[in-house]
Image (cartoon, rainbow, N blue to C red; front, side, top):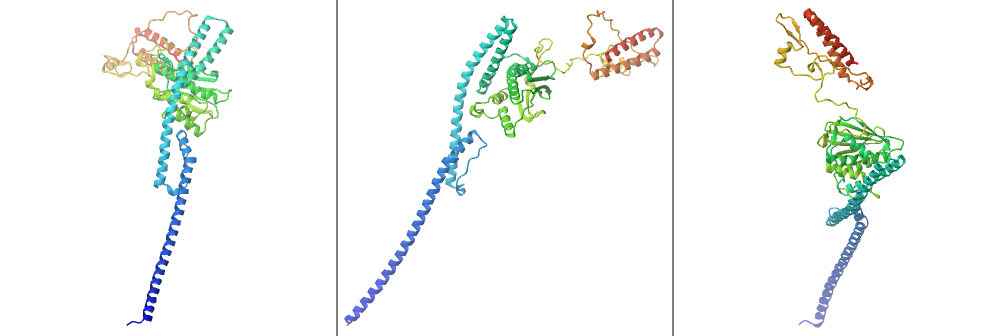
Length: 483
């Protein structure tokens, strides 16, 4: 039998082992709890940091990025700040924040367009009433000008009419910017009349110098007359406003390959590159025009030009400098907007500058009495078999029966009736001849003289007086033409 002391010793040993095992388990559990507490603390710290970073990112979004994104809708050159933490770019959080900005910009653009359209509609209605009142006032002033012939009163009425014309131009420009019709329907008019009509609507119109180099009769189709007058008036207004009052604004009207160009040069300070780019965007008319883009107070001249260029297929360029140091503005009117009027039936306005270009006749006539149109160098004609048979070698000579050159008789013109000396036009009033015409006349004189001399040698004696008479008459005519 096992004795009691042995049992006690065995129980104590077992209890000791159990206590040791339990203590080890408790120690491991405590260590595990410590690690878990540390991990939980680290996670809590990380979560708190993420929460603070997200809060800061949202605050940055609301304070900096959202206002910048809203301003970028109206000012595309502004930059929108990025997130505070560059590591968020491309992450779900960063993508979500960018979507917020895009949705905000889309909504701001939509609301801005809607509000601006409502403002333009209200302004269209107001300017329509103002235009009607100004037109009535203009008619009343014109009737007073026709009724009274007192010089002092006429001058006062003219000044009032000019002030009314300027107010009417401003109302018309505002209406055009808001999408209204130009306000006037005109018939076909000379292009120079449209330019001077735009000039007459301005204060300081005396400083504008117009140089007309167009062919006589160059006109505009009816629906392009008023738009061209408005555009020219606005270009001239900008040139007059931004140049010194003691300088001139030079306007040139020139033919180009695809139509006509109206060039406006001023001697002002010019524009910076950003100003020139903005002005070119406005006059191009490619982007929609909002009133909020035109400043406070709104400057509508370039915006009105952009509306008209897009609506009537015109072209305006303000991207270059003038030779005088200011700005050069060029209005291009394409050929499909041009027409032609007979200057004799419908001449331009008396105040319009005369053209410096000579009119080219449809069928050129010889400028001398010798020969016919066949001898005119600037009107060449094609030789045919009939011509060869009649003229022989094509130079007015033929082979006779004896093989000798024969002189072809030319028709003599009836002598002009005697013109009284008092009714004869003075020599100074005769138009100056071009160098080509003078050279043609001199060449015809020399050819005629040589032909007459050869004919006189070969002709019978009975024809000698006739040839001499021809030589005398043609020498006199060609000498007068050469002068």
